[in-house]
Length: 328
Image 1 (cartoon, helix red, strand yellow):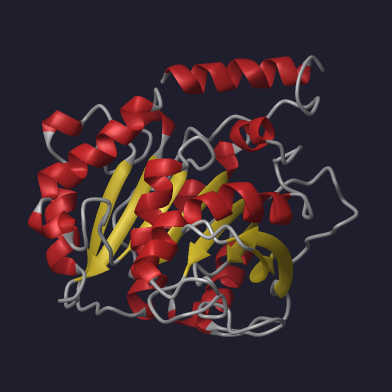
Image 2: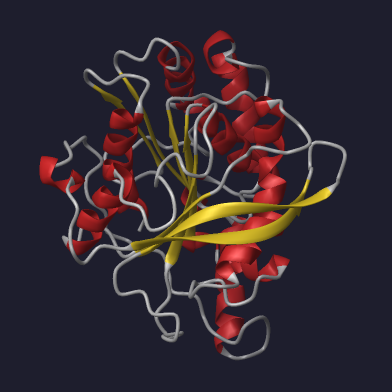
């Protein structure tokens, strides 16, 4: 809580033109839809004429797994309908989405100027007022110098903070007025990160290491691997304690972060590891960090098990459909 108070104070100073960008950051919302699961309307997967646009952004990064060689990467960027680059007064929240094992940055959107179920769903959600218009970025953890997906996911938070966020939010109209370290931290309430399967493991590492920069998290079908692959199932209390301590060590508590996550009931790959960790997160010992609530006005943590869902994007769509409106 201490850091959130400090950030709010910094926002007041920004409004006075004393530090940073010269503008105060809007406060986070205080009203939320209930967290209970709702099915995605089937027509949300159809193409609409006034939908958003998928473009690409190139950025320089380096191998954060050890060798430090620099190289260029590409991420896809969904710009909602109505986005106008010349309208600098209209700001957008940003949600970063990480693909699963064996995927690429094209997994969710298909490619530049493409349509996909994920894009179509976002188009309908924004058009129908389910959530605010936001920018959605799909990077890849793939690393040309290291083929170990686990190692790449473990290290990706550094690429996110140092390279990807500056490249995206420095180019588009976001709440990040300056892509300095302090500017990125000041705008954390307008940034989320999520992922599927291996991307969910990546999400928990981002949670553990980049809480200063990201406030909202949406892991689907994956537990934290900080203590080893599948530790959420084999060592749920220890895995949860590790995550909780990472929050406490940064001076945050449950009022400073939000987690909406889920898995399919038929997902025999991720469910046996994710569900024990989620049950541990509900324990009183961790309530200062993870506060389960049916509405985010009362807490910061919710989990859904999609009945009949498998380890696939049909489950991803349902979790994202329910979770994103609680963020933006």
